[in-house]
Amino acid sequence: MPYRKPRDGSQLADWQEDLSTIRRSIRAHAEHALARMKNWNILRDYRRAARTLHDTASGIAHLHNLTLTG
Image (cartoon, rainbow, N blue to C red; front, side, top):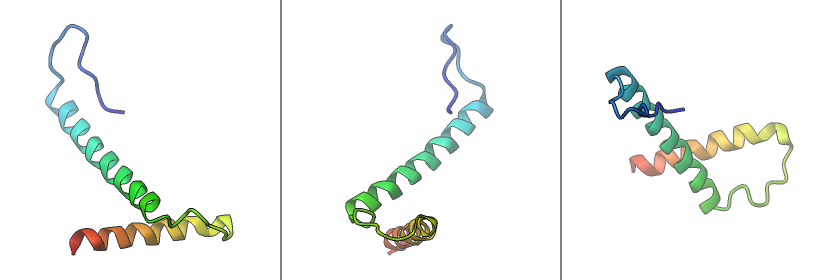
């Protein structure tokens, strides 16, 4: 969870700002990958065994990364 500014209005420490920036970036990447899965309707009719879901989601994430790199 990102750090919040103190109630007294003071600024966060530099390391807290840096950590929050990294967390925001990771969260944005994960949300974009999930949105891509929903947009492509890949998991809409998922009828495979539940144990294969991780491999399927990983494959989708790799395809998503390939589309980003061109």
